[in-house]
Length: 114
Image 1 (tube, helix red, strand yellow):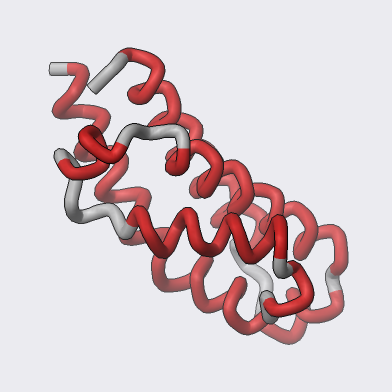
Image 2 (image 1 turned 90 degrees about the vertical axis):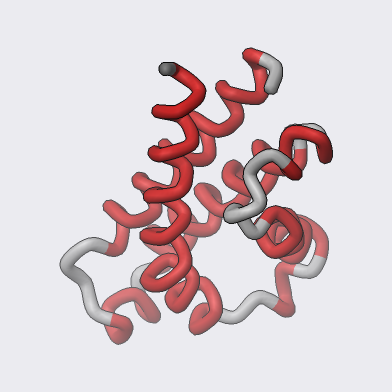
């Protein structure tokens, strides 16, 4: 893995953690009416997806536990099909998928640094 790709992994990790922080302690009902939080979370997903897209397929294959295709696909939906992305999908992803992604990214980065 190239050094810049490690930086992309760090960008993914930092944005995933930020998205989690933005929804920490709020309910689904609160999220639905909080446009600022929605925009902040959406932006973090854009960053996660763009950073993932910049990692070579060879390097992606070295970390098969990361759902690269889904991450990049979400970024593409946000950027190009924003009207098809539902708040429910965003909420479910930040609540369920991001905690798993954070663990994988932390482990991967730690392995790369050792």
